[in-house]
Image (cartoon, rainbow, N blue to C red; front, side):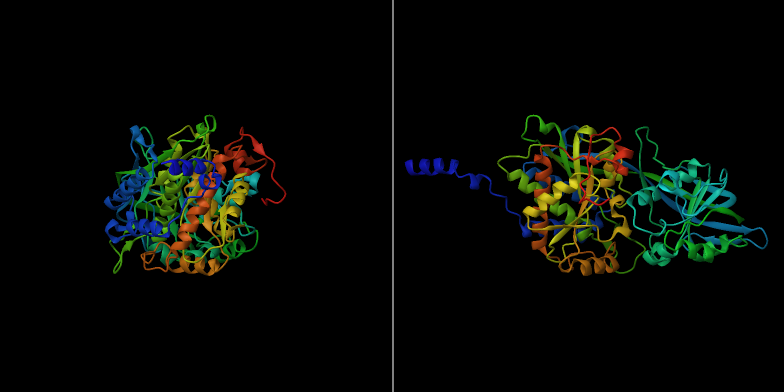
Amino acid sequence: MKLLLCAAALGLHAAPLLAAEPDFSADRVKSHVAFLSDDLLEGRGTGTRGHEIAARYVATQLAGYGVLPAGKDGSWLQPVTLSEASIAAPGRVTITPTKGAPTTFPHAGEVIISASQTAATSDVEAPVVFAGFGLDAPKQGHDDYAGLDVRGKIVAVLSGIPKGPPSEITAHLSRLKPRMASDRGAIGFITIPSLQSMKLRPWDRSLQTANVPSMTWVKPDGTPFVAAPGLKAQASFSPVAAAALFAGARQPMADILAAADKEGGQPRGFALATRARIATTSTQRKVETANVVGMIPGSDPVLKAESVVMMAHLDHLGVRADKTGDNIYNGALDNAAGTAVMLEAAHAFGGDAVKPKRSLIFVASTAEEKGLLGAEAVANNPPVPIDTIAGVVDLDQPLLLYPFTDVITFGGDHSTMGEAISRAVAKAGVTLSPDPMPAETIFVRSDHYTFVKRGVPALLLATGFANGGKAAWERFLSTDYHQPSDDMKQPIDWAAGAKYARVNYLIAREIADGAERPHWYAGDYFGDSFAPKAVKATRPKAVAR
């Protein structure tokens, strides 16, 4: 007994043992991904039984790690009600030129009509006005509605953003195009593919999802949220339908596309010589789903009032009944892998003898693939006051197909979170690389973006392009992204999964234990736009804009 007591006493002074880092298991990461991407969960589609099973699995795992429930009424789940809109019967678009016979295009051929969230029948006919890229932001150098009267008209715009140095600001504005048209008084909206967008997403690929229902979140009054309520109909056109729309135009469509494909090209708008009629019928239904939310309270009596959020979306694309062969979209890497990494980080934090100073919140969100809707629910009704959330780290689609040696922080140059992450990854022997694919403007395309819009510093973390990463990313994006082949048959590097969990653990630790919470940089567009009154930090010269 005395020997044991002496050993225990000696152990009390063994600081390195108390400070020992937790273990990170490749087998645990693999087991999580295997369960979540199993065919029996049928692709974890939003609102499906498979997704709800996945949510219960995540909650059970978190409970076993000592994480506390932080959902509604002390549960693990935050209920989310969504509105789903589907095309009830094939619609049509009719284009009538000033001279000549009208041309009609059925839905899911040369046009794709959007289902309405509010009306059973949509039938809009009006003259068409071309508005360039459709960006109404003069302060940012985009004044596409200058000199145009679109009240009561249908607006047609080019997809994407002007060519030039990639801009996350312009990408953010691009997501607001329908609302900009609605605010100007338009009643309909048509998207025309630019040459650049056709390279990135050929029309045949768009047709694969032409009949997939759309979703939006439901407001407290029970009505669906619609970003552009003035628009009574929306549609996307193929190059064939777009050519018919520009019949008799004062500037040929080919010239406009060529101009838009030049560096800095921003074709000016003008009234077309055609009218368009967009008609369809839609059905709407409520869909009940849920986010999983857990918390580890902070250890500091003051700083525990602030939180660091780690999140990963749990949903994927479900099952496509109209697809032959393998029609289950398992989503092993997108995003069972991100959820598994978050669970492994939670396992590590749960076993820590000394918890982080700030509280940790873990979110497995729903409906990311439907438009970041589960994250919207968390941001609209967070488990803690939104202004107490110090920062958000989003784990979406870590590419665990190679032994990564660097990571990317999409959005790390907007706030001091990037600096904290740089310090954290150095401890893991990993380097921090700049965005290698800025043209994809990934910063505005995942769940963290919903918190950015509420003024919270947030970013998306991904494995980098070094050590074979570039080839792995290009191969995955071209062959397996959003395809049934994103499953366990891929050559997944499970050791990379454990390493990635450690990286994220160190990142969350760095932010949670920091003397100061992350701050937006002074003069940053997103910080100034969404957190104008927040304390700002001076941007180091080494941090690029």
